[in-house]
Amino acid sequence: MPNQFARQSVFLFLLLLVIAGCSSEIPTFPVEGTVTFRGKAIPKGEIYFDPDISIKGPQGRAIINEGKFSTKDLNSGIVSGKYTVRIHGFDGKPREEAPMGKAIFPAYEVGMELTAGKAIAIEIPSK
Image (tube, rainbow, N blue to C red; front, top):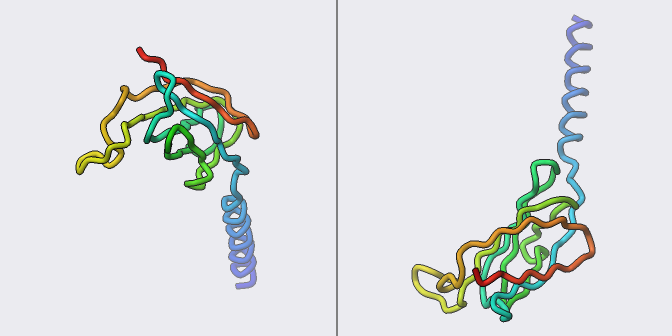
């Protein structure tokens, strides 16, 4: 019986080490900036930061209000690296079926290299 107890103790210890290792969070940073379309601030919108397959990190997300956004608002930071940035912009006039209003351009995507401490400015092209 002592061998069985020793094996169970070792197994339990190893399991606790694995669980402790899995619970460590990846350090992230917030992304802030502005988004414009035709030279004007986007009234309402959403912006997503989809990480490249080469980096291990979370997707970031923020709400755009009057052209400004910060992932701090949704506690949605990212890690440094390459991202596909997706932007959805709306006119800000709520409707029952569209709380942010009517889309003012088709969803826009752009690749970006993001690092901590740099605010970004994005101008959505007209076409």
